[in-house]
View 1 (cartoon, helix red, strand yellow):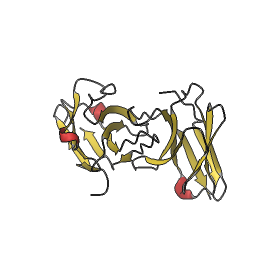
View 2: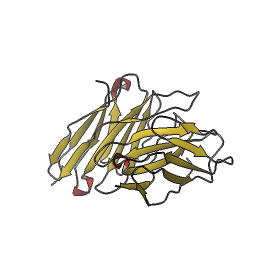
View 3: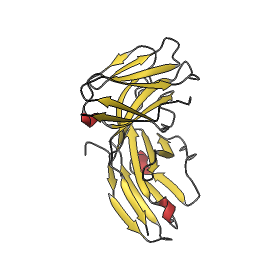
Length: 110
Length: 117
């Protein structure tokens, strides 16, 4: 799996958009970008994934650059409950282990 | 049940004793993962089962750690001769495998908190 680089921590004001970047410059053509988050004392939770196109679901949007070397997870209106560690992972798909890096600790403040 | 179930939720054991941690994945999920998370640390991959394939054991930290998955369903993680550094939350996850879309959302259990005293 390609390595990813994320900032260690970020802050965001409640109600504002949170934009979490991820660099994956060595990503292969068949590797997907996945995002998970882990809220304190809970197991990780899947957020979204994509291959080439931008994706949106009820939780977030995923913007992948045209060269696929980086992506951004967008939480459009962050709430206090979005405070968590966010993990960006790249992997081929179902037949590879899911390995978490160190992630970005997002703190949403009132 | 609807989700991944792990038992026990908490386990306190004496140094040197063996422990078994259980994971009941979501029915029909072909993939099963074990992770370890020490206090304040990230998720450390331990082992990965995928269908009938040989498991990926590359994350097991020592030969004191082993895992089985019987009948493609329930999994047991065994730690022999426990040490204090084994104290952590052990998380299990399962996922379906849908090759076409790459969609392999992993569903996590609530974990087993192991304390070695």
